[in-house]
Figure 1 (spheres, rainbow, N blue to C red):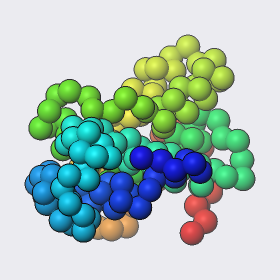
Figure 2 (spheres, helix red, strand yellow):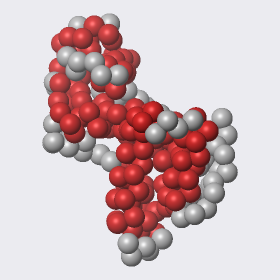
Figure 3 (spheres, rainbow, N blue to C red):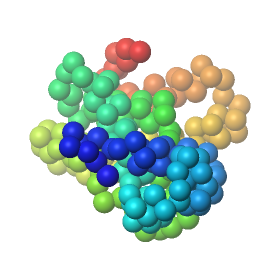
Length: 190
């Protein structure tokens, strides 16, 4: 699936993009529909991924890797501690909730955890362990729960509570501040 440079080939990349778009936006996770959207024969999914479950695993892992890349891009100039890294993760999830949506949908449809690699979690744990926090796992678990929940349910919460865009941004900023241990982060360069 990857070439000598470690990047995904064109056909697998198109299949992953089609699967992600379809899945995140509520479409069917049909092999034929995904292949049609990617412009390839459905047999290519079996060729490159082995089947539908493996395609879903690859899709979730790719979304997780994309999330990590987004976090690392935002912290490029520094070597962030766990709080800053976690806060940037909240911002990345809020800016692009694709991973939260795909993960939420998958877990609703199938309680089996499809992912085998958790790059964002690995980075968070490494930073937490480096900080020698006694309660690192507890803080990571609660931060993940609230962050994924906000990323997934923010549109519903905003409408249900009749929040303005400004109020929603303030709540997001407050959550980022809580996750970062009370430190306000500088705005992300765009």
